[in-house]
View 1 (cartoon, rainbow, N blue to C red):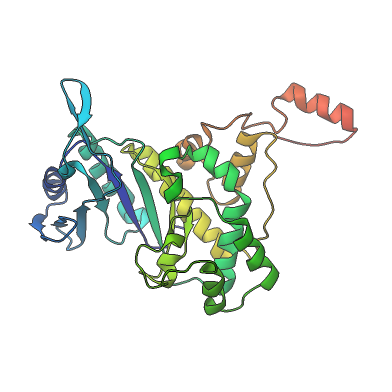
View 2 (cartoon, rainbow, N blue to C red):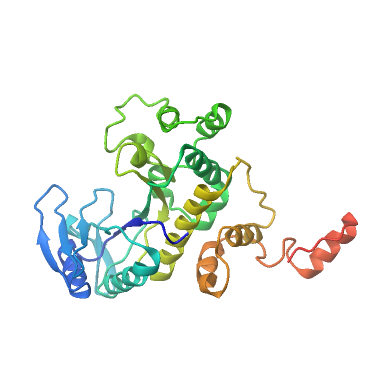
Length: 316
């Protein structure tokens, strides 16, 4: 699942775009340039030739710290880090190192900030895109609770529309054109509009049909915690891999009598296996209720459940 290319956008405040770009240039052995566009883009060309950008985003509540207090700041403190195309094995440690330096220099996030992950759409087929829709819709509630999406950001990453899921599964579109037609049903604005209203969902396919041919996942709060960012990237890549490889993903709401167990077993199924991903798993179910090891809460509860049902279940 780590062979897929991706890009990431990380929104934060606390320092200026110019300071963030200078820090990045030092870390990446690169150089900076000001593009002078509407977004006051500060561009960093790294030593390997790839371009990182630090851009203005009007949705960010600009703040900074002074004498231990958080105060309002001017819009130079609105920072969106836009990465170049990345690969997990080769680049995740570099990304984490950069994030740590930005945080140490005074960068921080607030409820207005988010993270968006763009996944390469080159390998997707109509079947895999339908799979992606059903996967996200089936786990809507579990993902939103696990990721603790800020109320201020809900209008920018809405849950999957039930009617869209139902239409996809009733009609079973066989072509990208058919899927695109269903995706834009009910919208009056032009499909070619960059900031089309359909994009503001956890799963954004507007970027696939009218953007950079990427599948975008928008359901992540802003953070400069390097471990959480890694967990979000691994989750995005695992979901993408499941959509690409599963023969048929049906829409079925997850049973959540034990949220932690449901999340742990799902993460194991899609590739979060072994000690390498222990921290990732913990980040993704730390806000969920229940017991990750036992479906019914504890060994004693399992025995009680078996006794009531007369079965011979192994729940660990």
